[in-house]
Each structure stands twice: as structure tokens, then as C-alpha cells.
Image (cartoon, rainbow, N blue to C red):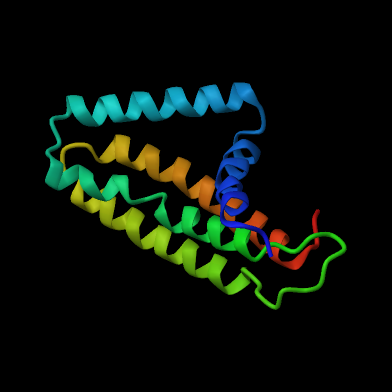
Amino acid sequence: MPSLPDALKLPLWIIEQATLNIVGLVVAVIWIATLVMLIWRAKAGWSQAWPTLILPLPWIALAVWAGLHARSAYGPQTGFHADVLGILAAGLTIGLSVFAIVKAKKARLPVFGLVLLNGWFCFVAAFISIMATTGQWL
């Protein structure tokens, strides 16, 4: 069973895989910075913007959990699979995304942009978490 420091590396690896290369990472960082600036310029208060901050929590928690229960290529099966948890994380992400968009009355369009990016990261996290816990890599 991997250690906690190794498990905490999986969300960073998922970000690396989701952005594909350094150029994709730079584009994602610029996209996030631009959308955060637009939310700030729309003068959306803390009561409207806080749901946006918790959007990545489901896929980060799933990635850390999968990192703790990852199976090496030649190791024994751990018995923990992320398929159901991946679906739950995706459902929770969709629910939080709708809540964030509804809550952000003055900045719905920039929040929608962040929701799209977060949805991509959630999809990649669920996919990689399933592969990490089953040991079947594509």
C-alpha cells in the first residue's frame, strides 16, 4: 500500500495528465487567472463566490483515495476500485457546479468557464483513479 506522501502526488499527476504538457498547463493557469479576475471585476461578493472554491474538492479527494489504494503493475489486487467513487465524485461535481452557477448571480459566465475546466479535471481524475486502483492502464 502506498504511503500518504505518494498518494498526495496523484492529484498533481492528474493535473499534468489533464493539461497534456507545459503549454496546456500555462493555458489552464492563464484561463483560471482570467476567470478569477472577471469574477472579481463583476464584484461578486464572498457569498456568491465561495462555492467556486470548493469545486475541485471531489476529484482531489478521489485522487488521494486512489493514490492510497493504488495497485502496482505486479502487486496484489487491493480490493478497492474507484469506479463507484468516480461516479459519485462526478455526480457531486455536477451538483456543486450547478450550485456554484446558480449562486454566482453577477458572475455566472466566468463561473461557468471554471466549471467546464473543473469538469475536465474531474473526468480525468475518475479515469486515472479507476486505472490506478485496478492496475489496468490504457
